[in-house]
Image (tube, rainbow, N blue to C red; front, top):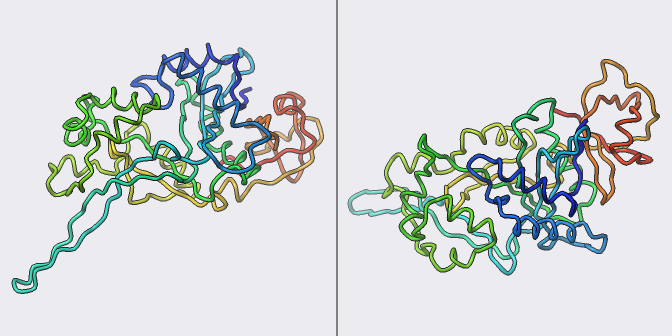
Length: 333
């Protein structure tokens, strides 16, 4: 059995080991022990009962294999992006150019730099070890966050976004970065991405081009990847779109990966969550898999057979959830 829960101080070695094994790296989980220790400290503060509204809280969840105690996955929520250090994106706009005497009318796509100091909630830091990509664990990592969000809506913004990893070619290069970012930042894509993930955003403010970028001036192969996801990210995009997320006109400033957006109360898992009392026993053999969670700041979530019409929970599952008096559930779709 696997359980999703808030990260603890004692999880640092497991988190470092997991981060070091991520092929290609993950911006928000670089294999840097000091940074990851700070991420744990930030998350511990985020789960404080004294938090009453959305701020800069960065919640980090880990997926634990209860049989081994090993940390095999992570997912996170930032209550509100922006703040002292702005949240950057490029907004893709269509601008019209007209010259009436010659009857010339053109619409041109233009990328405008956008800064947010009081932005929406963002989900991210999603990673599952390849050996555990089965049995609905990827959906548990992604969707259980919405059960937490639904249980504590005042801690989050009314809008939720997700920035997805942009397209990389067969050489592992970002065509957009090579055409745009490299000329201004003087680093390869991975180095700049890691610097941003480590919280060093001052270099973005100093170096990012402030003038609009006219898309037709970029090579066709670069234009084609604006808003396109990395191959490995396609399942995550499909899952979020099934939850009600939709593409926006904004893309990442480094790799032009797409940004998805949803209204928190309209996310499918938030809308479908229900609470039930239960009894201990053996669930029916035909019971469908459900996301199951407690509604506590000491959050626990798992995937197990559950029939809301006949709410029976195994003792092992109840123990994994902290034996709550009632449990929250949503279909695992």
